[in-house]
Length: 95
Image (cartoon, rainbow, N blue to C red; front, side, top):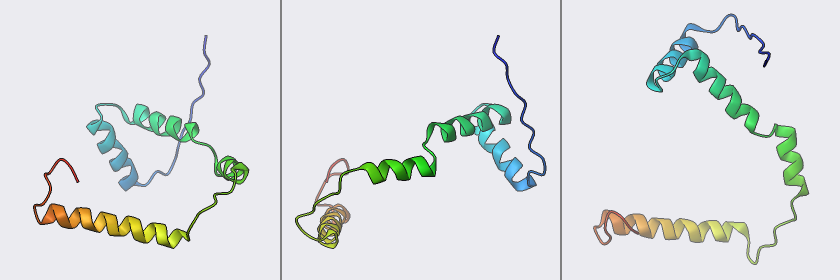
């Protein structure tokens, strides 16, 4: 037999409760199941402290050029793709 605890949350603002109800209804579920899903998703993620510890343990990244140059290149590439799509030079499915 699995034991289950009860969690009561008091003083939930009406706007928040209404939004939870709306989202639960959109998902075809109850507020209880919707909120349990939110809690499960949150618990599946590492805590901020755990995440920072993992990041600290990663090896440093060595770049051949400053990060700003990589960003500028990526933005230029993106702008060219968007421009060609706007001007009808590429199909809707591809760059």
